[in-house]
Length: 253
Image (cartoon, rainbow, N blue to C red; front, side, top):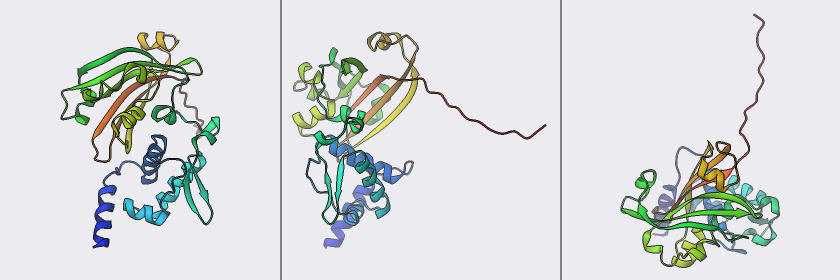
């Protein structure tokens, strides 16, 4: 009976993985999200590699690769003979304080500017992720880092959550942290799409950029343990120009 239950668990968790991306990469994203969102807290001991592999229905190799990446980022510490533990966030160096942490868990050093907050029809690009919803709550927000404009965009979530997610809270904390703290929603995985764009006039003025200068567009959808979309956002970030350089040799004509 125990073996059967474990098999069912493995199969269910295995369904999280897409065949279009390396499993180690997807597992890294899952564990990183759990750590940065607070689902896994400082001092928590992760399952041994073999047990983790069994619980996800995968081999040990991608588990080791994922843990190696998280160790390099300073999110976990591996203690010989003891196991792997979630690191204390305050001990991370400035270099390892990633943008993902700012997106998921870190309080803003300067309050964001909230330009608009209300309810809207589900945007077409998110309709397939929220099939049961006709409308979503939305927030239009400009966030700062080191006193400078850092990102501008819209956040989307269930309109039932709008009352507790006040403008004051949304000016101080990332969306997914608020959903967890105010509604107990645990984010298990996120889908990201990043595109290089020429920034439009509205975003350019708020991000202190010249119109049509280089920028990055980030779209994300966050899912809970049941695979239900709990939030989404579209953000624009300042970016250096993306240039591809290469050399090649040619046969003599």
